Amino acid sequence: MTKIRCRFAPSPTGRMHVGNLRSALYEYLIAKHAGGDFIFRIEDTDRERFVEGATEIIYNTLKMTGLDYDEGPDKDKGYGPYVQSERVAAGIYMKYAKELVDKGEAYYCFCDKERLASLKTEVVEGKEITVYDKHCLHLSKEEVEEKLASGIPYVIRQNNPTTGTTTFHDELYGDISVDNSELDDMILIKSDGYPTYNFANVVDDHLMEITHVVRGNEYLSSTPKYNRLYEAFGWEIPTYVHLPLITDEEHKKLSKRSGHSSFEDIIEQGFLPEAVVNFIALLGWSPEDNREIFTLDELIKEFDYRRINKSPSVFDMGKLKWMNGEYIKAMDFDRFYEMALPYLKNVLTRDYPFDFAKIAQMVKTRIEVFPDIEPLITFFNELPEYDIAMYTHKKMKTNAESSLEVLKDILPMLEAQEDYSNDALYQLLLSYVAEKDVKNGYVMWPIRTAVSGMQMTPAGATEIMEILGKEESIKRIKKGISLLENA
RNA sequence: GGCUGAUUGGUCAAGCGGUUAAGACGUCGCCCUCUCACGGCGAAAACAGGGGUUCGAUUCCCCUAUCAGCUGCCA
Image 1: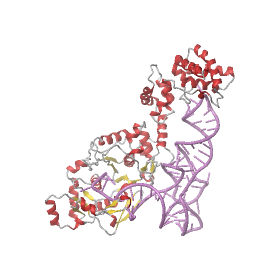
Image 2: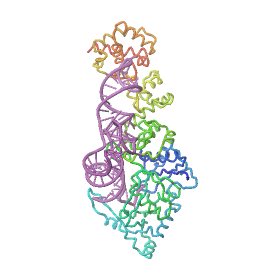
Image 3: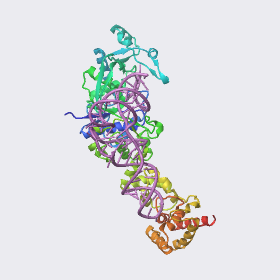
């Protein structure tokens, strides 16, 4: 039994897409579940789309998500280099392309853009289809030599048969067949000397002894051509696992506009890496039981790629939020506090010794992502303008009149009170409730309204006063009284 | 247009010939409660359509529809 080797081979073209990240995750999980190796390779053969800094983003994403690779550009285990542009420099692809030319499985093509354009067939919606007509396949050896010698730009194309069918097996999708007449003579080596993905991918996967080729199913339709390449070389065909795609809410491919296209975008919105990993693991895969919360290690243990779904799934931001909220609730307080503090400090700017830890405790069960904290606590910093209609609450049986009465009764009690701890204040108000023989809410509601100016708060009236302290609490109660009196 | 694939509630998703068709998010209701949230309980909500095969189809086959991907000197 050979050791399983899976690779993650992204192109450094920008931020890391969540579809890409999920591929990386599944590749990692498939390898690790079987005790295999996870290889990281960079496919930078498209010099036009290369984005400066994109490689760093990929490294960083892998680090943040905990997808540790066993081999990669900075971890050569003898299969390197792991960056395709370096492999180009080493002449690897050209060597194999020429081998194919010698075998008659590939050929030089000197057709220029104009001729290629003339081959295009106009089809609906402005889409054009080009099928190469094997024009250059018929060049004689002498003609090829002559053109090469005279420096005419060329590409190397795969020479595919035009009759018969090609079948390949995918672990998830089963056997897939296509007529060979559908197989275009795709370009292997571009005129700039770089290989296309189609070629580099096959060569590298073989050379790096990748056993399981795991990738998005946008490659499903070109896999027959890859198979023909393996066969032309006489190489062993790897196990294929094509993954269903992830779409946005409109069932369209995730776009930049959808706001959650990249891992970085999501992290910037206040999500935790482990929640994102957990969430995307469940997008297209499910465990045997109904469990939904998994650490990476637990995923490794449970992940069986045969349980991967075949149909595309929508990236549901709402459920990601829920899951992130679960992670926040389960987080130990010290770590939560540390992460929440910047948001707390951002809002609580008043020159007052706020008890940040207490406030953090209040919001912990009330947020899904960290930025949710801010709107919850701004009232602590400053009493907002509010409408006295807020004093009226049907269930609490309160209205402006009753509220005014309660606030006026309570004010002297609060002024006399020295201990502003939550417990003490609560007992104090409860004694008033008992004395008046009313429901708790009847007195709590107007007080909470007066000290917060908010319809909803992350804490009760007495907890709020504990935070605000005596002076500020009384000031806000008085403000409430004057608002009600002047109504 | 051609090729390939997919199709279970709004979303994720179990199911792999016989089930009251799980569970989760969201939504709604109730309880808890010093508001909200947490927590607890409950409700509404699905097998794309049509033919077969079969004693019996969500499960197997075919057709249609819809969606997606590919159809690049992008990956």
